[in-house]
Amino acid sequence: MKLHILAVGGTIDKVYFDALSDYKIGPPAAAEILQRVNVNFDYDVSQVISKDSLDMTDADREEILAAVQAHPAKHVIITHGTDTMVDTGQVLKQALGKTVVIMGAMQPALMKLSDADFNLGVAVAAVQALPEGVYLCMSGRIYDVDRVAKNRSESQFQDL
Picture 1 (tube, rainbow, N blue to C red):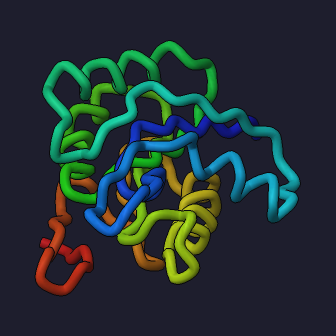
Picture 2: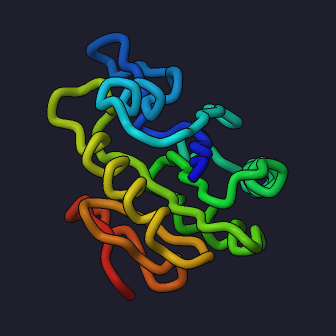
């Protein structure tokens, strides 16, 4: 299996600079995580967009779709901000013949208490086991992109 990881920004890749919460989107955290844990599969990581998901536009989502369709890998993980990952998932349903898992983190990967490593690990397992389609993976759960929503008050995703 060759796994393609497409980084598009979001909290998982954020790097904070000061007490005013000034941040920028840094390099893809997935590359460092997978290297650090010494995975036993082929993968590549590319970055297409570097935005907080609240700043993403329909054009950005079309760019993500084009990147997924253009890459030969059949297994794709997208690291994404949690606020609009469901919206991106709806657009990605057009990527036929692929298994796409969208994941993110509630805290930046660079932070000690981040859920990034765990969420990426679950996404790697999910993308290998699931049939073709688009899924969202957060907090140890795998969701159908058509039946999930973010509950902001609980910082969790839930089935619809």
